[in-house]
Image 1 (cartoon, rainbow, N blue to C red):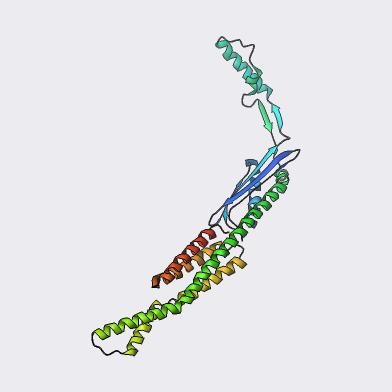
Image 2: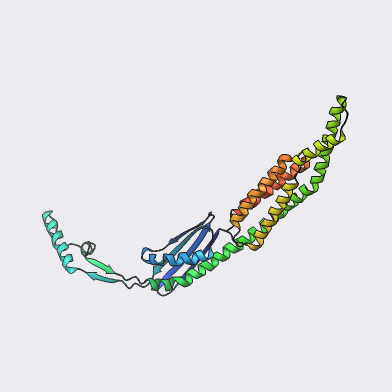
Length: 292
């Protein structure tokens, strides 16, 4: 099991550049992946997107790849003709305004557009070679962080599921007690009503009506389905590496059964256990939202 939240950072400094890769993720229903690269490395985006997608199924993932070059291979050229043109034009403005045109700063000429031009070739494969080991290191750390958190979440989910299973066993143990108590109450009520009105007591009629009421209020089917859902969740936790969506669906089904048991209940002991079961289930549901 893997958590949808994770973080990793890796950085390497070489003679040529400082390369850093940061990966972080939070919860999301689907895979929402953003790769942040310098514009000149955009051709590499699909490559890194593919590498992340191989490891991540769900989550909002942000990847930041930064490269600071320590050696520049940029070629700088000077357009001297344009520089002279700027100088002459600035001198004319200075003379017209009464300024000394013989002391115009060189910096003023150099900062004019087109005087100095730089030309740099961007070799995408070269940058890929620089980034690759750093990216792999960061991705390995990121996956390990999510798996570590996922292991903790799995242990927590199993503990909460165990608690819910005890509630289901309590319901199963109480089912015959509930039916017996309910049968006794209904029978007593029938006899009381019939005796007050001097009617002849028809035991078969009483048993038939009682049986019909017990069928209506029995929780046997809900208990069977609840146990089935618990086993299904156990299987998902054990066998499915990305059970998040399935866990959420199973929680919905469990909630339906527990609510039905609560609506049919007539006893405070069972009512207290229904509350405990709902609390355990809510904890499972909240935790499952963090599962990939």
